[in-house]
Image 1 (cartoon, rainbow, N blue to C red):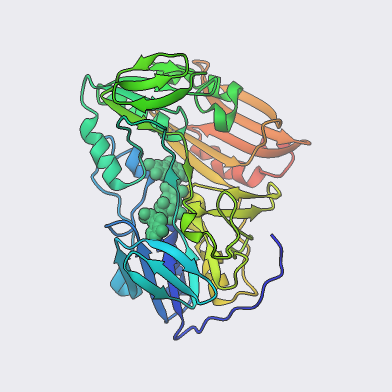
Image 2 (tube, rainbow, N blue to C red; image 1 turned 45 degrees about the horizontal axis):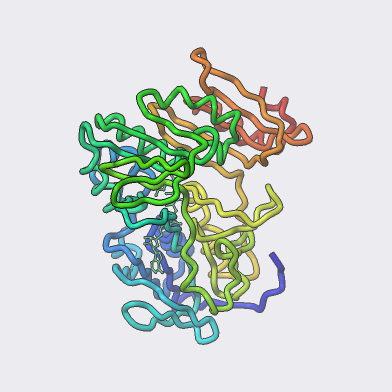
Length: 389
Ligand SMILES: Cc1cc2nc3c(=O)[nH]c(=O)nc-3n(C[C@H](O)[C@H](O)[C@H](O)COP(=O)(O)OP(=O)(O)OC[C@H]3O[C@@H](n4cnc5c(N)ncnc54)[C@H](O)[C@@H]3O)c2cc1C
């Protein structure tokens, strides 16, 4: 990210910070700003109708019926936050420092963009469900009844977790995946193939594309039509950037920021799933789209809002997890498709551990039910592969 930025100063006592988005990143940012003695006005605009909550349990415990909610600690009174629910930002004027929202104009001195991401949908007129909000999860859960035919499109993280819940609920599950193996988009075919055995009892159709979802079912690229009671589309997410068009904030697939969450516009930071943050690990701007990033980034974002010129860099070794088919997968680092792969298999031949390296240095580690190795792996990323032994 280019470094040339005009200065920006925020009055600690009387400044007005507006946070757009009411998810994990927003909640953590508000708490951090108050911890850093910011006593000015703090306003959170959230398109949702409920206070911030945690999303990972939605596709796990909530879908499994083990809990109905997953609230985040966010005490608006204690934090003195003006939380405006059901309010969507629709345009941004950075010259006048003003937001246009569905509930009128809002002025700010410093702005945080924390609007997350929106699931991609398939073309077609038929009903399809995506899983992003608590309402999505509660609605989908009602439909996961014994014998229902559930077609899951996408065998990546969300697809695998939904398939897990649907199978456990006694549904008949078909999963259609464009890649050659489950999880192959992120982990590659060789690693993905070692997870295939986990899909027992599910009609898993790989190397198969979906052309559309129509009222008569899911239309596949080989001409097959899969009738379905429920279609769940889990093909990835994208930040919704339309409202930032013409604002002067530099955009790519997400909002471009440096390692301190600063955009090219002084006084405007972006964080969480919406941010395409510079990373020294990969030498590129990356969308992180994981809980750990949205949770840990608040310190850098808050410090930049309070002191534009100096502050801590946020560029940790990336981490995410997924719970699927009774297993916990944990991944640290960031590998490229042509990194050197080493695979360890469990007794049943399925995936146990994978490591990737480049020029002899560990780039990423993935473990299945190996939480006890995680810390060492995280520390070892960037070191010679032997350091992990
Ligand atoms: C079902 C599910 C399971 C997941 N499981 C895992 C997991 O196992 N491991 C993992 O690492 N990560 C997981 N994640 C990812 C993790 O939850 C996200 O990375 C994290 O929630 C991102 O937080 P955020 O605050 O950036 O965005 P969000 O939590 O999406 O919050 C953004 C908020 O902004 C609001 N908003 C959007 N546009 C506007 C606007 N214009 N005006 C006002 N408000 C707006 C949205 O409605 C939303 O409330 C999962 C995500 C989902 C959906």
